[in-house]
Each structure stands twice: as C-alpha cells, then as structure tokens.
Image (cartoon, rainbow, N blue to C red; front, side, top):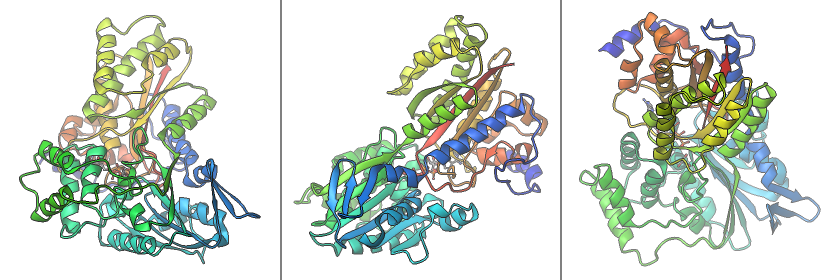
Length: 523
Ligand SMILES: Nc1ncnc2c1ncn2[C@@H]1O[C@H](COP(=O)(O)OP(=O)(O)OP(=O)(O)O)[C@@H](O)[C@H]1O
Ligand SMILES: O=C(O)[C@H](O)CO
C-alpha cells in the first residue's frame, strides 16, 4: 500500500525525456557539472562499443581473391556464404557484415529485439540498419527480453537455413547478449510457456547467467551447440559480442555453436538449489531423462570457429580514455563485478568513503575499520580482476577529480512486485549507502547503466545518484527503503525529481553488460 501511495504524486508527471544536449538543467545540491559529465561519459562509452566497428576489427574481405579473413584464419568465398544472428546487438552487426560481404552473401536470417529497427531509425542511426534490398530477413521478438512466439518463429527460420547447408558452405553466426531469449526452440514436449516460466522463476530467485543458461541449453534444440550441429557439414564462424563476465563462449546466448559440457546432474543440482525440482513440469522431466540416456552425447563442434569481437573490457578502456579527456584521473577497477546487488552496493559505498578520505588527505585512512571492511568485502565478492590497491594509490596521488570505472552484472533476488532493473536497483542502493557515510568535503556521484539501454523490463538504461539522494527524496515524500524492499527502483526514479536521475538512451543497439562509474571530486 505504501508503494501505491508513494507512486501517486508522480503519476501526473510528463513521460521521461531522452538525454539531449541543452535540455533544462536540474538543480542539484552537489554540482550540476558532475551529473552532466557522468551522463555524457555513459553515452559516449556506449557509442564506442557499437557493433559495426567491432565487427570490422575482426573481419576483412579481400575483394579480388574473395578471401574472408577472420582474425588469423581465412575462408574462400564463392557464393557460399550464409548468415544467421540473434541478440540485442545483432541488427548493427548484420548491417556491417552485409556492407562488407556484398554479393558474397547469399541469404541471412536474424532475430533481434522488438522495436529495434524503429528505435534505430528514430535515433538516426542509419549505419545500424540493413539496406532496403537486403538479403537478410529480420524477425523482431522477445519483448522485455522474454522468449515469445515471434522469437520462436525466428529460431525455426534460422534452424531451417542452417539445416539446408552443405559442406561447401560457410555459415557466419552473429551472436550477442539477449540471444538466449531471441533463439527459443524448446525440445518437445517442453512448450515455450513452460520454458519461459522456468527461466523467469530461476532469474527471480537469483540464479546467475551460468546457471540459467545451463538449464536453457538442456531444454533447447539450438543452444549448447545445437545450431552448429544443424549447420554441419558446413563450416561455421561465430562472431560474438560478449555480455558475460570473463567472455565464456559456452555461456553467451547459451552457446549455440559451442558443445555443452554440462550433464543432467548439473541441471538437477541447479534446480534443487533454487527449490524448483519438485515443481518441474512433466515435459521438463521427460527431456532431462532422455538427455541422460542420449547415446550421441554432447554436440561436437570441430567445424566451428568461435571469436569474441567485443566485450565490457573494451567499453571500460574507452570510458577511461574519455574520462581522462574530461580531466579525471581514471582507473578501471574491474570488468567482472558480480554478486548480490546488496553486497555490490555496500562495496561501492565503502569504496567512496575510503577513496574520499584518500583524496582529502593522501596517505590517511578513512578508518582502519572501513579499510578492512572494504578489503574483506572485495575478497567475499571474489572479483578476479579487481585493481583495488592500484585504484586507491591513484586516488591518493590524484590531486584532482577521480573517476573509478567498473563493469559487470550484479544479481538481484526479487522480493517484491515492483518495477526496476539491476542498474537502477544498484544505483538506489548505492545512493542510500552514500547518504549514511561521512564523505567529508568530497562531491560523489555514482552511475550504473546497462549498455543495451534497457535495464530489466523498464524503458531506462540505469540511473545516477549522489549522497543527498535519500534526504532529498524524503522532502518529496519518497522513502528509499520502502521502494527497495519491493524492488521498485524504477518507480522511485520516475517519481524522484520527475525522472531527472534516470539514464534514458533508448535501445542502443549494443550490449556489453553494465558499467559503473564512481566520481569523486574535492569541493
Ligand atoms: N523489479 C526489478 N528490480 C530489480 N531488478 C529486476 C527487476 N525486475 C527484473 N530485474 C532484473 O533484471 C534482469 C533482467 O534484465 P535484462 O532484461 O536487462 O537482462 P540482461 O541481463 O540485460 O539480459 P541479457 O543478458 O539477456 O541481455 C534480471 O537479472 C532480473 O533480476
Ligand atoms: O542471452 C543470454 O543468454 C545472455 O544475454 C547472456 O549472453
């Protein structure tokens, strides 16, 4: 009830505004320029990881010989090239691929998010669109990142194309995050609805993407190497834009061109862990039991070349370069932020406090206690590539504004029926953390944004916060803790200051996980 009452005052507000240069400024307690810069950095970071340039870095064609080079491998083209693709970034990848391949491309089918072509047109991103007489057929589906009938139709068209290939053919597979939902082909008798319910339940209970996709693979005709097997004996080259920490090709979009190494026991273990084994539909039990006794074993993928063409690491490297151009000392902390969103938020709160103390008085510690808590939490979160020591040393020597950059994908265990996403929930939690910590005379701003432009089932990409957030919200009658208890971060940010803290880019046409920016500046 509290949520309903709190949401009322903002119902009459205007719809969210896109981030446009020159829009009216929002008055903030702690420096508008910082907020403007943070949003600018987010947008330009996303702009640096658009699919076309990343594809061009991996692929080249010698027009005279018809030799296609993929990194250090070459393939002879002679009217034998086909293309399929699925994922949030695949429209732009396909447009770039068709432009490069020209007449060599015989036919293609791609499965991309609902509304992406209209969004790219509206944004004037012509380079992300296929040309009018394209040989690539486009299916749009998987609204809100959930597999649906449209995506199923696309998956069947992709399977049909793959199955028609011969040993003389080459299949180029374009893969990016969101591909799992865009390529659903459940093994009968499992239905689309049953698969959708199971994946939704697993995600809501906090299953990570590795666990989720292990289950998806076991129930799918095309995931876990199934697509590569359908295309056999054609050669297969997969160009993959990674949206998973560590870039594991078998996990991204559930590895349709990578042999699955999981067995039924792994699936049962995951289903048990999330309390879902007892309630499994009969069809799922049937498919798992069948897989257990499958004499053919996992798909073999010796005819496949899988190549990662872009990732979160690339986005962070760009963000670092651009933050430095804006006058910040910038350090990349990690491209592998994972773990429960509450712990990740606490990590950033502690980091702001410890780094803020370093910035104010280099060489001092916030307090031995906070310092230790930060290190303990970092160890608990098990972030393999964390550069904490280096980051704090940089802050201590900075003598000016600092920007700490990270990327990854924390997980949210849904408890409420509110509307939100990973990034907005993280930002709101970090805002609450910052408000409770002594930060001295340091301006702090934290931003969390999904590079795909859509955070969970919301129309925002993420949000930014300052330490004053909770107290400012209270003056508008908004209680941060109540919104958080219902996972209602999006409703909060829509209400708070008329949505001014939301990142609102629209679908970006790329997808390399989330980015987190922590800005610190002496007042
Ligand atoms: N109300 C909510 N509050 C916070 N997080 C939510 C909420 N509803 C959904 N989520 C989270 O949003 C995530 C799904 O978001 P999204 O569709 O952006 O996924 P994604 O990981 O970006 O997709 P993909 O990896 O397939 O590209 C899930 O992790 C889910 O827990
Ligand atoms: O599609 C998926 O499975 C996720 O985005 C991870 O790649």
